[in-house]
Each structure stands twice: as C-alpha cells, then as structure tokens.
Image (cartoon, rainbow, N blue to C red; front, side):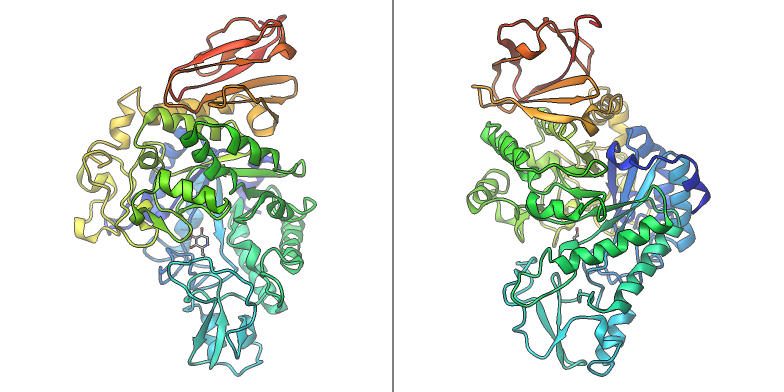
Length: 554
Ligand code: NOJ
C-alpha cells in the first residue's frame, strides 16, 4: 500500500463519487510534441478538482501500436513514451491523491495487441506449447459459430488466420487484438501480476474492459459464461486479500439481468455500467415520453448493498445501441444520427452537445436526469463545456479531439506546430475552440461550465442521489418524468419536462401532505403540499430537484 492510500479509508467511496473520464493524449500537452501527456494532466489537476468531481478515469496509456487508441496493449507494465515514463504515471497518481482525487485505470485483459511479446512468442512457438497456449487457437475458423461480431464495420469473423502459427486465432474485437486464453492458469497468473503492478502503484480502481468475453465454450454465445465469472471472482479474491478501498468497474455491455451477474454476491465487481438506460434517456427526451426510462429502471434488479451502477451520457466510444430493440435502434438513428457518417458499428459517434443541437436547456436536462438517477455519474472530458465532434475522422476519433482550453493557437492544448497535433481541434463556427473553451466559460457565469460545477456541488451536499431508493410517478402528462429519491429520512422529488414546449403536471403528492418543496439549485420554497394534486409548471426542457421538507423543519 502506498502512503497516499493510507490517508483516508472509505471503503464505499465509489458509491458517492462523480467520475471525470479523460485520455492523457487529449487533455494537455506539456512538452510541445502535439500529444497530451502525464505532465500536462498534472498541470490541469486543479481544473478537474474545481469541477467538483472525486475521481479520474484514465483511458489506456500503455505502449501500444494505437490501432484501437491504446486498447491494443503491447506492454501492460509501462507507459507509452509519448505520454511520459512510468515515474510520470506514478507522480500523476500521487498528485491526484494530493488533490483529493481517486484514479481509475484501464485493465484491458480480454485481449492484447498482436504486437505484445506474449503473442509474438505464441505464434512462433510449437502447437500445444505453453507459449502458444496463451491465446485461443484453432485449425478451423468454424468453432464457436454462435458468437456475434462486435466491430461489425471492420470485422467479418472472430477468427483470423496467422501464417506464422499456421492456425486461426480468436478475437472479439479488431483482428489485431487476439484474445487471451483464460483457461490457461499461466495466463490468469500473468494477469494477476499486471493487476498487482498497478494497484501497488496506488491506482484506486480498475476498469475491467470487455469483461463478458474472457472464456469461450462451444454451443454458447461465449458471453457471460460461468467460467468467465469464476475468473473475475479469482481476481476479486486477490484484490480483497492484499488491498483496501480499491474497486473494480465492469465494462459489460449487456442487459440488466446479465450485467448484475458481474456484481456477483459482492464477490466480483463493485461497479457496472448501466448501458441500457443511457440510450433510453436520449429516447425519452426525443419522444417526449417518460416511458423508456421508467420501463428500463423498473426492469433493473436490485444490486448488493456495497455495489453501485456507473451511469453516463457519453464516453470515448460510439453511443452504443446494442442494448435496445431493433425498432428503438432505428428510432435513435433517425433522431440522433440522420447523416450515415454519424454512425459506426452499432452506434452513433457523436458528442453530447451536437447530439442535442447545442441546446443548453436540453444538455442541462439530460445531465439533471443523469445526476439524479441511481448510480455514480461519469462526465466525459469536454462535455462540461459543450465541445463538438468531427464525424469525418476515422473510427471513433471524432469524439477524441483535443480539450479546448482557450481561443489561443491549438485551442491552448499544445504549443506544437499545428501539423504535429495528434488531431486538429474542433474548428467550426458553432463548436470551434474560438467560441467553446474553458477560458471563455470561466469568465461567463451563465456558461455550461459554471452550471456543471453548480449541479455537481448540489449533488455533493447529500447522499440521497448516490444511495437513495427510487420510486417513479406515472403522471397523466407523459411528457413529465418524475421520481422520488429517498435516503435516511430525506426525500428529493426530481421532475423533468422532456418536451420542447411549456408544460404543467398534476402529481399526487398526498403522501407528503404538509411538506414544503425547496428547489435545490436556488433554494426557493414552493407552495406547501396539500391533499390536492400538486401542480407544477415548466418552461420547455426544464427541470426541478425539490427537496420535500417536513412541516416542523420548514
Ligand atoms: C471497449 C473500449 O471501450 C473500446 O474503446 C475498445 O475499442 C474495446 N473495448 C476493445 O478493446
């Protein structure tokens, strides 16, 4: 355990956290080579801390051919020299802790890069040798036929022929990302070693990338298998045995019933993303109907008391549409990706602000929902200032452009020659860095940045949002999403106008007769609740978080 880990022991920190997701490459370039780096991230820690978040989730920073933006790892225990050295990564973890921020890093062990020495050794070692056995090989490409392809735009099979090995190797993602063979105890031992390496350097949480696909079995779809869960339990046993206050976050893009298996009996992952609710938030707003959100939340089973959902609106990938029906997918494409260039694989490669037509009210509305649903919210870097996208960049790179710090050259991200930048910053009249940047928004109290800080601040005042129960209303006006969150005697009514027109709603709040609703952003007191239906009126796309204060206190 490092010194910084000893400081404050709070085993359930992840349940009350707010996470900021960032790529070292994209944040700030401290050495003028056109790429962000650890030194740059360290310089910008006060900005992240001032947002009010508690935790940074760092995208992969390991040596890699970067054909999947670092999710193609060629060496698990060092740092891509473009971003710094191992010492810089460790310094970043320590500095983050000094700023009161936890750090989550990527644990990408379903697959490696084909450039990883394990794969290079495997392909030239004899069939059946311990080296070859690190990966999943076959003489034919017909095994596991019931397994879907994930990257449908690039891959046509989960098998690729290797001319050196003279066998096919298995891969769930790009063909340059062979899957490790978790049936081999030597692989599991090697992976545990990688895990210990980063935990020993002070990392607080590991995001278990692509976790449903660890083990393959004939006659199944090779997802969520009991053997895969057994591997995760083994990792968790090791974690619990040697470390305190650390956390696993499962990336399992599955339906709620399958995802909750990754919490296990509190003996697998502490957190799982809630993938299915995300597209349904967008759908509800576009349809002006609460139903998609209410339905999926009702279908979401209870989770163990020390576990937590991770909720998000956007991230570094496409807005995935895997967890919706075909009809819903068609609706989402029509509503949010009218230009085919906006689509990739089974999803939409766009950022939050352009998805919502740069409409500040709608951006706030979606965040208001996100920050009040059960779970730990994640903010994708740049969304707090409403950054735009470039749908003409390859793969998902259009949502990974440099952070826009100021109207200066290269968006204040780097002092390198423009041509050296890993990617051009967004530069169009609406979302360009000249108009959308941190410096300008720091000077504008009506900016999205100010608002984001304010809502985070409100959320941090109470554990109702992070720990409370949720109960939905079903108002006759279906354009109003309404639910009550409650925890330890405190109750917050969250009401959202999903419509682009002004609305009113009658809510049966008779259970709270005599209580006074107090709006949490501005602390205004509303009319006291009586036995009659409670009437609320809304401007277009507006919302309230109302604490229901009992008579004796109000
Ligand atoms: C999930 C990551 O989020 C994505 O960016 C990556 O391409 C795949 N895993 C494959 O590693």
